[in-house]
Length: 308
View (cartoon, rainbow, N blue to C red):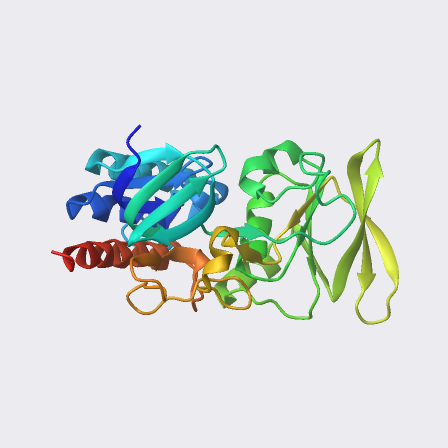
């Protein structure tokens, strides 16, 4: 296995796959390092209606289209979970969990984010037993049964709408008295008879039956009264944490762990770029991630050429 590249991309979401198209087209020997299936959060999204040129496409289909485009262009797709990145004598050393070490002239971090947990007992043990972070993956398991979604942003509202295709009722639990979602999504949620919005409440405990979720105890944020709502599944959508542990020692992240990059996707370390949701940015969307990936790949090309 060849381990020396011009550009190594960490992560195969929209940002990474777009860079996987632009890197080889610029003549760079390019590889993507990804521990899971290509697509990132795309494969967890049921329908996408804001990707230019396609009025409606499933997340899985768009992920596969991007993956095929990148691999046909010439990017190498390598399975590996990155554990540490260091720069030695102008060359990046990328260490992986399986013991492999890759070297590259440039690196683009497009490792995305990980969904935040609720902080309740069972967060780590109940996944697959009624706790899920992927409505698209697991929604069909709960046909004609009550389910609950936690959160008030775009993701919580969009996944609630998706779950109405299967569930008998979708309890949408919001800690505030307003949504953070875009207005047109709010309207869809509030007009859907299958969605029961429970304002000003927070989850406090999973209720179990033989080790499987059968209900959720919630508390009022106004008067602290508690109640148990029947539910066969809980889907938390309360934000995300950036996957940047492997570069936390480099001093290129903010207090929340997001990569600090400039308008050219450059970090403070020459040759090291960021792209997509992992960056500190205003808007996290597929189209902005693709933009980041294209810019970062072009900047990698110019950085390498600057040595000639």
